[in-house]
Length: 224
Image 1: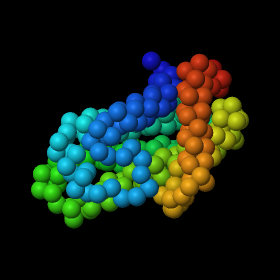
Image 2 (image 1 turned 45 degrees about the vertical axis):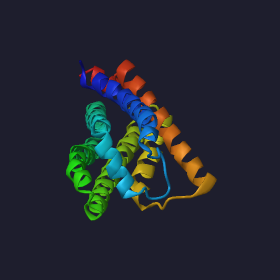
Image 3 (image 1 turned 135 degrees about the vertical axis):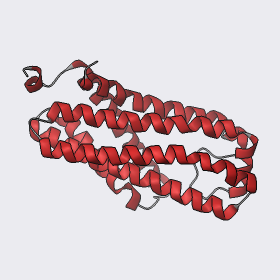
Image 4 (image 1 turned 60 degrees about the vertical axis):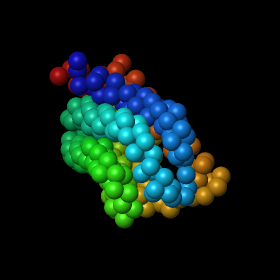
């Protein structure tokens, strides 16, 4: 399978993985007494008790992070192949940023296994440190992916390798991801609207990019 098509399937797969992960969490978390989304800190003892009662539920969430990490690096490599002759510097930097995101997401997913020993000891201090590290890895990963997406969107706009509107969607999503760690939680309707807009843009961009990569090879590369 050509790399661009593989990247296209990976782009669509990333959305499906997120959807399945959210659905899985929606089905299992309420049964464990945990909220699916919360603006307030969840009682550490409640989380550790939930882990002890159903460790398989939390372990089943780990592969989702691994799959997303793999999907993102495949998308970056596919776009590098598509634009390597027209924007080599941009794409080289984008792949480096995507590789950083891949490594951080992988570390975050694999590191989740450490929760088992913490839960068994009911160590609140260790739990707090663990969640801070996991949150930091996740924020850093998506910020790195944001920079990759920003560079790829900018390269696509400059080279015309992707539809112009899609390039701008990549650019906007990249900015939102890149600065997301620095944005405070916005309460109320404004926060919900921002979350929905970001989610919809990412959904539209990932599916559109997947279709473009699967169906249409960039003309300049087709002649090579």
